Image (cartoon, rainbow, N blue to C red):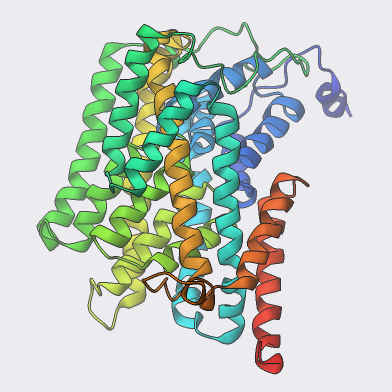
Length: 465
C-alpha cells in the first residue's frame, strides 16, 4: 500500500534502483524495441522519464543530444549512457549489450530461415512485398532527415554534391564524410549562421515529477572527467579489439573472411554519422561490391528483416555477416550454419564495440563542448551529405526492385517498361503514403506489404498476369 502511494508521489524521487532491476528493464527493452531509433527513444522516454522517473526530462534530452553527435546507433548509445550514469561502467555495458543481444539472436534465426527456405513460394511472396516497402522506408528516411537538416541553400548544395559524388562517380563513403566535415568546418567559420545546428530536440521544459537523477542532481564520481580513466579505458578497448582481431588474423590470415569482416565493420562503426540509414550505403559498397559477401537483392531483404526485428536497425550488419560467412563457406560446406553464426557475431561485435567506448570515454568531455560552433558545424555538413547518400541508396533499391532483370540498353519504351514491376511500384507508393501522410508505423507497413506480396504471388499464376 505504502509502495503504491510512494510511486504516485511525484514530489519525492523514487527509491534507488538496484543493478538487477535496471538489468531486467534493459533486457525487456531489448525484446520490445521495435520501430527504429525514433520508436526506441520514445519507449525509453515514456518508461524512464514519465513512468519510472529514473531520469529527468532535461537530463534525458541532454544525454540524447550527446548521443546524436556520435557515430553509431543513438538509441543503443542512449541506453548505454543512462545505464552508465546510473550504475557506472558495468551498468553501461550491461544496458548497451542487452539492448542488442536479443535482436542478434532473432536475426540469426530469421537469416537461417531466409537462406534455407527463401525459395519456398510463400516465403518468396512475402519477401516480394517487403522489397518495395523497404524502398519506401529509405525514401521516407531521406525525406525525414532532409526536412530537419537542410535548412538553407548551402546545406542543400552539400546534399546534392554528396548524391552526385556517390551516384555518378562512386566516391567511397568515408571520403564523402571527410569532405562534408571539412566543408562544414570551413562553412562554420565563414558562414556560421548557415552551419549552426538547430538541435535535434528541445530543452526539456516538461516535468514529470522529481526524478532519481534530477536536473540538478550532481554527477556521480564515475561521471567526472579524468585523464587516467580515459587512458585506462582506451588501453582496455584497444586490447579487446586487438585480441579478437588478432585471433582471427592468426587463425585465418589477413584475407580471411572473418578477419576482413572485423576490420570492415570497425570502419563502419566509426562512420555511422546520421544513424543506420547513413551507414547502409557504406555497408552496401563493402558487402556487395568490394567483398561480394551478398548480392544487392539480398541486401534489400536483409534491411526488411532488420526493420521487422527488435533492436537497432544497424543490426542488419548481422545479416550481412551471416550471409557472407555462409556464402564463403568459412568453415567448409558442412558447417554453413555455424559459419553464419560466427559471421553475424563478428559483424555485431566490431560494429558495437566503439559505441561503448564513445560513451565510457566521451560523455563528460563532449557535453562541455556541445553548442560550440567549432564542434557542431562539421556535424552539420556531414548530416547534410548523409541526406544525399541515403537518397542514392533509395535509387539503388528502387532500380533493383522495379527492374529486377535490369534495364537493357539502348533504352526504348519497350525495354524501359517491358520488365517493369508495376505491382512493386504500387506497393512502394502506397507504403510511402502510409508512412508520410498517415504516420503509420514501419512494422505495420512492412507486414501489410508482405501480405500484399504473398497474395499477389499466389494469385498471379491463376490470373496469368
